[in-house]
Image 1: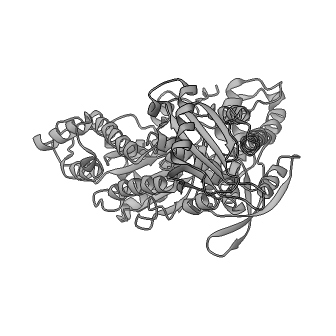
Image 2: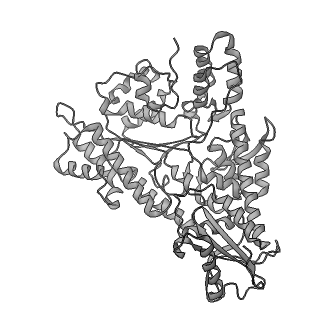
Image 3: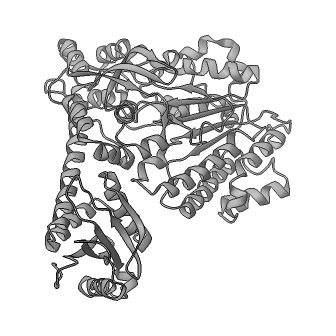
Length: 580
């Protein structure tokens, strides 16, 4: 009888304990165990697209090492790792600290610090749940309780994992009272998740957030002398942020790593075995062909793999007569990738859009396995940056052709499967639509059409959350980033008249465009929820401060802003009346 297929399950212990389908990836443990035996204290970093089994593999590693499972049923019996009997000495002999960066909030430095405190609170609660209080001294118990209840300040939390590691190594005991004596295994999931929410934040905020997270990661895995093994997962292999590069020579396993290619995703042989087990015999060849066409096409190292989640969903649905469905979806919106595609120049957009025109389309492009985030952020026009991010995020397949120096791989790139063709086309089309809509807003400003400008920008605000921080500063950053994304020469706090206008878009001789002087007033500043009244107050600033004086034919833009709503008035310096 075929095993029940787990859909969305990410707990290795539950899958094995309940007899659910598990495609064996346990040999991934072999090099990790060898590092522990050799006492190397290595940090292994695995980067793959979302939905390719990173979290499940992390759960499998946790289940193998965690001392909390000592005496529990052997869920590794008959799996590949059981053939390596010399590694049994490590099984369930180490405390485990598991940390998830998914909930790190990068919206401001203060929010980042606050979310680190929350993360430490969750880790502390997990440690107490796993190992209890019996091994703790009164001082350790007091600190752990304080961390678990969120009572410790950020300076203590930033170094808390280092302290917890030392406590576990020197204090954790077996039921008979003897010392366990092993330093913990530290597991970090989704270390780069914060990038999804940055949404073209100002560079100073990006730098400050990455500095905070770099300090946090350094405390966990660099200055910490009390861990046996570190394992980190994510999508992007970030370079020069300090988050990874600040560690002591991490062992990188990116998409081009041949040694670990088969451990993420399902191989052809594995899918064939699953089809034989779950599909009626007369339909097996059709099901195999459908699965290959719809869900195959990724290449990790030299191994071609299928999307494992989509295969599981396809087999679980059990409808092998109809055409296979599309199951791929992002677990959360990736603002970083959205912004990168949207802000890329037309020539680059045309190239990536061409890959979706017809099935089997290919292009030769250079791919950077390591993403220098600051370079991507400062130069979104780079074809290499955009293609690299599309590859590592799972939107494009990359087949290596040759190495270009030490940092690039020249690849044949294409859309990996029919399933991804729709998601890829949607990503590109949506970015182009947003860009087109954005040009409508710019056209409205230069045409001095306030009503149209309000409609165009209000449509853009619909994609944002009411929970976003809509302070005056955040609104200004949002608007400045909007123009910079479209390669306008723009700056904030520009001196004009008797003050400093919020955003100045410089005269553009190539576009034949006059300068734009933009001033923002939020309803919070105006003390009223009435956008009309707020707009009047904003218009008055131009009169009182003589904004725009000194610029010939400048266009003045009064911007009333209430979170996801706005109202805009526009006029030339030579006009008497505002266009609303």
